[in-house]
Length: 548
Image (cartoon, rainbow, N blue to C red):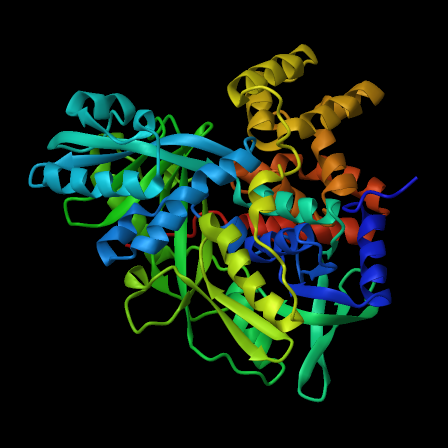
């Protein structure tokens, strides 16, 4: 019986396979760029390996605004090609991941002084660039229609424009790309940190990695190596005395989370305060999150947090945009911060392009900088063009990445019907409605795995805690089939409970720790260390004391 490639045993086997074979392409970094590249390369027939020093989506790819969006605001900067690419990719991504790319109406409110004609002209261009069907094109809303979507929005509202965007769970979407790559034969391992590059004369021939769990070292030989470490791209090169051709600009974006009863909202809405501050509010199940900042970050790269000043600025904008909500810092139930790895153009972070560039660092070593979640598939395609040159072979195109359905997305009916049917099945098993809604929003056809666990033993369908809309089987699934090796892996990047649950899901920690201890063979000291580590991380995602 073969082991699951994303089980603990499958992970160790992948590392052994990496060392025993020379791979065509080695990828350093398990964010959306690296995982998407691994999937692209293996679908073109290459022998592929990917190593990640922490966990999949550990950095930017779990701390985005969680939108697959067309980037209409970039039209103002003249970035027509970026907008065209982003806008058209949205539908492709929904096709390959219907369980993770959810349509969401996005409203642009118009106030006194806003030119309706100007905005409509922009959206006409956007609709053409996106190639959307007439039924999906933007629509003009009356003020009362905007109010039906966001009843507490500020005055003086005169009208609005609504168009279609998509919301996702960025971490699970990244994981799905990694799982897809492994399914097609790529060797994938998290918690495998590169310690140094290896060389043959002036050519990079691979890396040495250390397994952070077992501390064993592996020597991996590769014909081409690609650095896809995002905010760590420059650090990865400099640590081996290699220099990038350009400077990077790390821009920090933070988000504030509220309960939806404090800021009633359906879908998503652009925000502009009377003082001119801009942002957005987005509904996700029973929560609304507000973002975002766009400020240079010069501190530690690992685990950035939302600082008091940025929180206050974002909260003030929210208070001005929803004055009748009477929200205060005590209504914020969570925060998160992410770093955008931009290419420094000498501009303000907000005005800096989100385009990507692939750099040849040495023979056998490429590095990518810039980019955004929505365009990750085309970023991989651009990298593959240079990989083909390095390998001196023809590798075809990336059509398969637009056709191959990601794990969990093989839904034989329309998604709405699938969602309703699955929720009924879950509730018939005694699972509460809110939990069933969350499970269908995140897991797609993997819900059948959870139901199978329940058939083995009903205990797996029991709640993790009374105030946490999650079940015990999710922890088992994460360990056995999703390469979760820590409590934080599960609570943050597999289940999204760190960001989207009451008190960061802390009431479930004892149960999660017990299940993972059993499945992973932890001793008492390891279990306690894992619990303490998660408590610290949860605290970092709470609201620090705001000083006026």
